[in-house]
Length: 318
Image 1 (cartoon, rainbow, N blue to C red):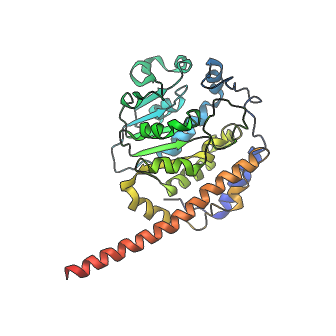
Image 2: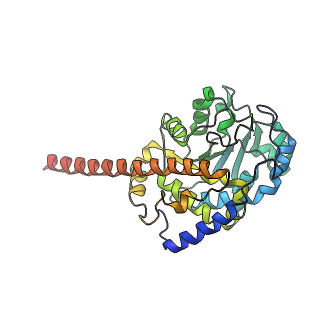
Image 3: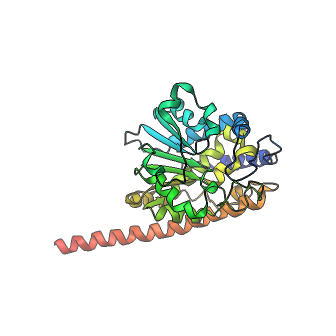
């Protein structure tokens, strides 16, 4: 699945990103309001996101490339959609016109387009036991930087909500430990990538490692995202893609064909973060890459065992 590109092009890309990461900014410095307490995102927080709107177009551009072309997908749900910019990017930039929003804060509602708000948007307490019954059924689900706002005791229920209607794909990302350096009191469950992978596995969803690597790689090449990288670095750092467990064979085939020249543990990737981001970036990217190659080995073994089983079954029929 990963596009084979000359190594020098990757190096040029990373050099560009390295330059831009010098401008990694604290939320307060770039004018984004932080909540004063748990769940206290006010209208100022959502107003501040207007400056970041182009990022959501870039995210949708790269997510859409990964949707299976053999299936007629027409709908998407963004859980914790905030201003709805990602929702409207799906609607305007792709054929997925049935683009829905579920948001936990009513302060985001003034930003929703009036023409679509009543049909496609709703405010919902994501911790309520009945929340899962109120979300629309869609082909694709997205949720970026939302799960960390819910207590650990609710993590499994939140993942159940995301996969309740058996979407074909889930694009997910959540803040990792110390991502906001303790400055955001609404982050009550900053956790590792492995933690969320396990949470999805408990709901019979597996990570598509190659798809995730492809998404991250392409996002780092996207000129719009690169332009805003210093203000939205967490999207690419935390991104994970999940698919139903029944897709295991396809996922295995994809990861074993990962291009060797694109080494996810290369300094070209590990050294992208600078300043206060350096340790955080290297730690989280290393975790992803390590898990990737561990899973690649497991996938190769599963494929060998499957072929052996098919061979043995063939002998039994003779």
